[in-house]
Length: 433
Image (cartoon, rainbow, N blue to C red; front, side, top):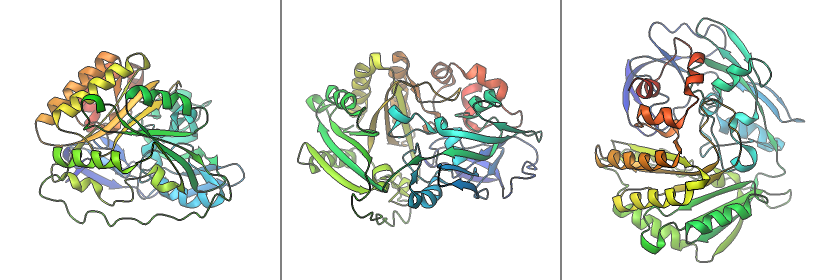
């Protein structure tokens, strides 16, 4: 066994790793529990299996078929989203839904039913999943679609990798005329302005998201910058791929993210846009993946790592709950460089444990200080719980079992679909506590 960690670098566990390279004879992994593991970009322990074995799918990275006339792509589950984009964007196709990093695998995107900036029009990743093969530990292979093995289809989308191993998947991509995004960024001073912008943008803009100043206080509480955009038409300009920062070559001995640096960054970020609205046309990468351009950005949090917190609160209580959450975060002196605020659409989730649901979602990072931050996150949980919201398992490393069961009431319907050989540190934590 070796010590390993997820992208948030907390917690650290000991687990075995079995490298998978072919879709045949995959599950000869020995004793103990198993868990599929893609590129490890989940932030907490949903991709970890302390004391058990992870089935590393990096070797399952082959494209099986792509039809440039229809945008239907079939590939193995270890293919990463950036590999799909490299193949399909030059042919006029883009991912129907993409999260904030392109360095996740297709299998991981299914297991966490990832969402993006266009949930209000396109839903989540699972909404564009046409089919997949699910390999169970007894060797059974299930062909799953919305009309065949539909119960397994719904259980595996957002199923945290616990129903078995997805060996390949078939996706429906969306047509684009250019790799450019035509975007607008708009400053807002209060949360009610954010909600007004969201409502006014949903019809005409496929992609919407906001940065929020999590360090603001008093009259400035709730201010931010609203970003909205669409794929640009053909002939909109030259598609210049961005240059990438070399990133952090080593882990500093202490976190570079602290109350002083967060306040300074948020203040500068707010004031760097002087005008109320700014228009731009640029390559898709900075719009969708701003942090991907900084290699190993997670190292800036130091050796203890960080905890990401992403929640959703329902529409009826969104304003009051978000003001309370932001007030708690600002008062704590903790917080994030890039806090993200986004409206989910009024759509039904495709998976039994899918996180997206109608409401407003807030996501931000906190340095792991081995103490006060956990107490802060418990207080945030209390606000989210009282509002009838939920916390995202893919970003979590510490929510209680009681809260998980409240946030995901369909977990009881999900349990019969768990493969008896599959488990994870996250699942044991929330179901055995």
